[in-house]
Image 1 (cartoon, rainbow, N blue to C red):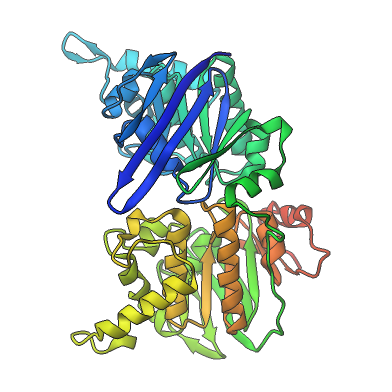
Image 2 (cartoon, rainbow, N blue to C red; image 1 turned 60 degrees about the horizontal axis):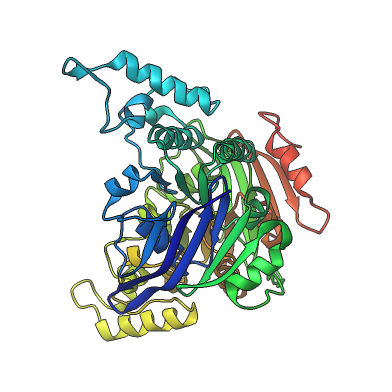
Length: 499
């Protein structure tokens, strides 16, 4: 295998921030190379320079020992470099074939040659062993199939370097295995794959080497076969992590939340559960089980068809999120970027957004008091930001999640719903999020936590509710005897209701 890509001495500056400081990356042909580091380490900035989204301030990029000029995404595409972001870049209203060849249609006598375009798209889909019609509208596809359309688009461009940014975050284990088989096929065809992920167990499974970054600098380059999970984590965070799940145990209080017979659309069917003060109720299930739909209906984001919600023994009516917030319920959504934050606003304003009444009437906000609260939570949650005025969109994923949690801490919500609270954030930031959850528990909050990461559910929950096809199929005390196998059994029970 030859050294196909070399990035040497890459420097990138943003106002007030040195994002990359003399960073280097070398990737061989036919290699799956992990690019690892905590949120804010510089991974995304580095691959955005490689894909033409950013320009570098210093350094050089060589492809096959020839210096490459990458001024924009078109230069990158012409050089055979493709990137598939976690937020997929597809047009839902167009067909699969139209998305694959977007901006590059096959033409015949001045018109689009639809027959050839569908035929060529089908060849690419067959190459990926994906059962999708090239005529299918992309908006009707699931996330895993959309990702395969992105891969087909990359293949159509004759990509020699493929960058995958958190590719498995929304996928089930079966879908991940399909993706890995495609990656191995690309590897056999001498495609260089740069693999960015916070799921380090997958890095050990699929990657050959790993470049680890910290604070915008190179830390280590490791042969994956000769390393361990603990060594990778030590390089990433700069210290040993003694405990990956710092669960605390405090006496549970009275019943704070009771949900009875909650139904909403086709995804939520007669769901019942309770949560006590200082308790974490974990909700487990496969993709499509109805977990997120349940809490969205509970919080008033989606209309519910039936059911009652009681807070502190009192029945409450929740028609919209404002009703839920007034009842003392907070919701850190799975999609923090589009639903949990106002990305164009300063991160400080995001923190106080749900608690403005604490700082005075609408037209007489006490700005000094508000600023004091913002600075307190920045310090308390160790949020890394050059200023409270920094736009939320410019924060790393881990710091964005801390801002969302700070918002609900400040709001003094007694019931907090956390939907995938650590998705897409690094191992160090995860532990910081767990400590924030522990702080909520110490304050007596009732926590409802949805997670697709089984170790997280088993390690942080006091009880585990399992869902399948919109129904509750199991509810278990997490007393040390509960296993992943048992949860998965109940998560695949179909419409059978557990006793």
